[in-house]
Image 1 (spheres, rainbow, N blue to C red):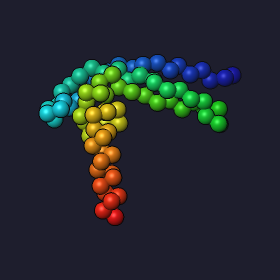
Image 2: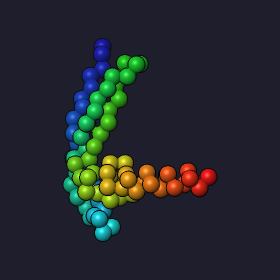
Image 3: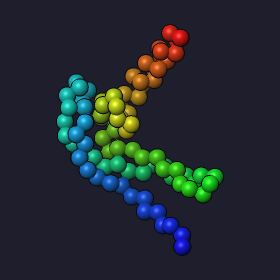
Image 4: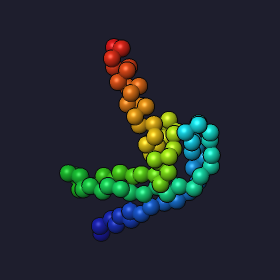
Length: 82
């Protein structure tokens, strides 16, 4: 019997939403699949995004876009110092 995949968005609370002033809020978010790719082994690779990812400044959140450029700059600086 083949396993069926149910790929769908989920919603829930985010307790670590930070605005541009680093003030923390509780927000409702949707985590949605944005890219689905069949891998060589037959499994699926799924990339997800958060509905508030573009506005969030949480440095530890994988979905927060706002800090991506800051993180890349820090990584580049750390490599330049080596």
